[in-house]
Length: 122
Image (cartoon, rainbow, N blue to C red; front, side, top):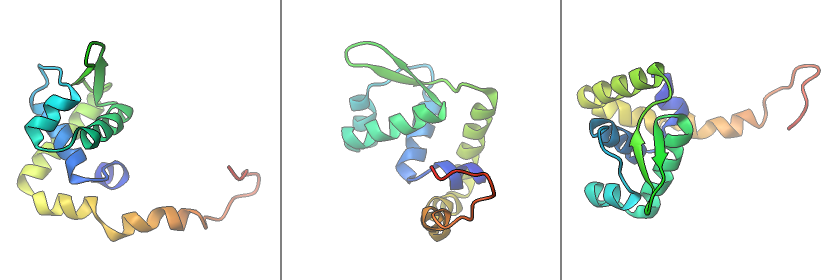
């Protein structure tokens, strides 16, 4: 699944997504998710930020702020559903994709990508 390769950087990130998806009727604070998943608040906050930027979560203002699974598009909801199914049935294959060695080499390879005429360096 291309989404795993391109956007998921840890098993915890995937598990936070699946945790919130399974409990989509509720909004969660970083501390609540951290307690439930037995992780650190700093780690969960980072996962929350990445999932929010991907369009899976919304933030609810408050003290503390909470966040909730509410994908921006039906396509993102479908991706999350497929991720949940794949992780349930093929857990180790999904983990292998998340940690694929070629994934770590991509930024290095892209640094040497040849520019087409008219492309600027940015």
